[in-house]
Image 1 (tube, helix red, strand yellow):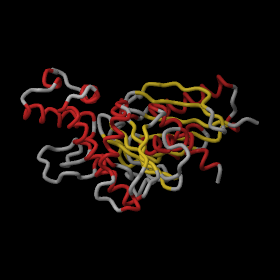
Image 2 (image 1 turned 90 degrees about the vertical axis):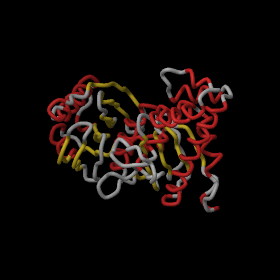
Image 3 (image 1 turned 180 degrees about the vertical axis):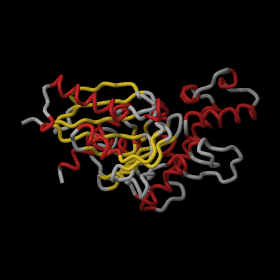
Image 4 (image 1 turned 60 degrees about the vertical axis):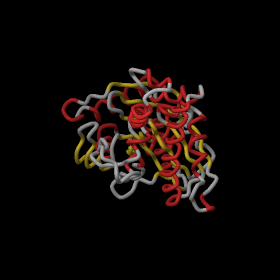
Length: 316
């Protein structure tokens, strides 16, 4: 009897879904809209309905389904309990118990960035290692830590929140979370642009970036690749702050590989090279020489990681 697993990655606007075989082959992927009305109360039933529909389409019985893994955009305890998920409006829910009641199949929930890290370790940029850290550079900075093939979620499910490490306690502008000087303020797409605008104002000219009315992180990387001095300095500064942050992480978990994902990672090797050029400075010898790779699964990392959650539990 062929067996299957569902990977369900819940986003703020869409829920990404995948149907996998027990061997990890992605049979089909699709999306459904995220019903955020009424504090996301309709989301669990929508997920249960789409799972039932796909089972009918493929002629799959519940006995053939090993389970469904869920990526949740907020802290999730190992038992599936979510105390507060602001992106959906969920409060005080045990997602595992709720989804098992609605679907009749085993469920395992975890934070969305953590499952993305698990997916990249399994089938993406971290393939072949069991100790890795994923850093996602997008609108914010996220992360996931994998040690011996397992997610480090912490006591409350907030493990891996790398974007909120304090890098500059003298920072006067607040992070989106309300804190000050967090990595996200310097290394996210919006943070990179924020820092660039400050430098452009100081420079007063001499860079192609000075003529851009709507500046983006991509503009900065493109200009750096073309040899623009100010853009190259900005990329170097970004590499330095990321290297410092990741050296702190390495001193705690000692990964084999750092995988860089998120929209900013589309800049390519110029980003990983900027990090590598600073990483070994000041760090103890045993932690030097880490590998820096680009993520390869893109937006599918979450569904792969969700599927792996279930496959790991059934393999025990």
